[in-house]
Length: 83
Image 1 (cartoon, helix red, strand yellow):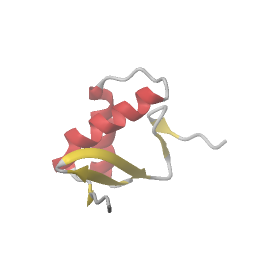
Image 2 (cartoon, helix red, strand yellow):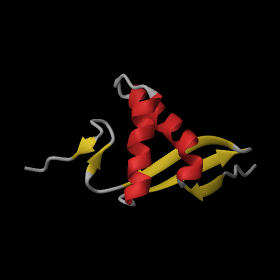
Image 3 (cartoon, rainbow, N blue to C red):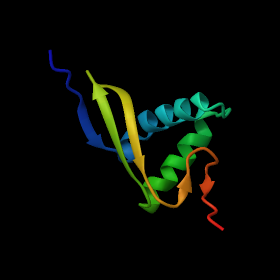
Image 4 (cartoon, one colour):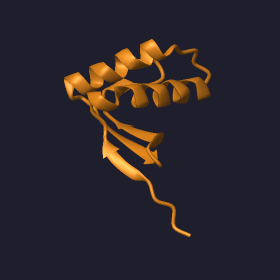
């Protein structure tokens, strides 16, 4: 049996879905998070176009995401410091 998901590139239209999944991701790693912090971070990434986000939907329910970026840390919600 094949499992299929709908994959879409995230935009501001999917901000609620992305930020909820992102908040849960951070909580998995032990970072206390409120959805408003995650929502602000994701919104900035989308507006600044410094990230590409893809969402997986199963029967129209967001169930996964991938966030592609180079210069920010999702756990500290800040730019990486490579120095």
